[in-house]
Image (cartoon, rainbow, N blue to C red; front, side, top):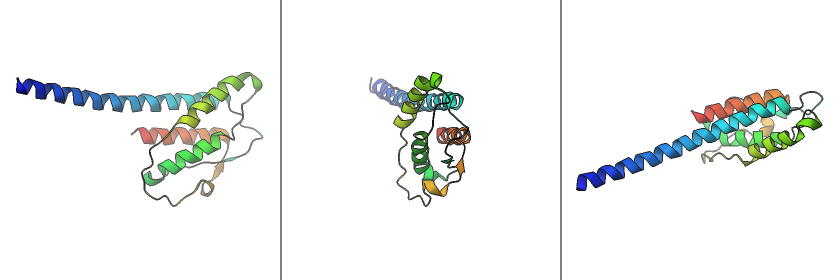
Length: 133
């Protein structure tokens, strides 16, 4: 009987860990889908170039995500027909959080090269894929 209880407890604990991990993956996949939608609705001509973190080291991931979130606020919709979709996707991106590693990052948003909005979003997509691994 005691073994059965221990087995059930182990099974329950392991299933909780798997559920938490799969929730994170679903959240990241939704975020990638949102970025893809935004790439189709963002204005890319005659707009402000944005500081674009590329290949940040692990201790700078939190800072890079913060830079991307700050940059998304400067994005503009391609036209008025996509405005509602655009606003929804920006809202999703603003709510995304990444746990701070607590390590000190040497770079700031302004230290990254400025790129067009579509290149900015492609780099954001690459960053989220890196975080997923």
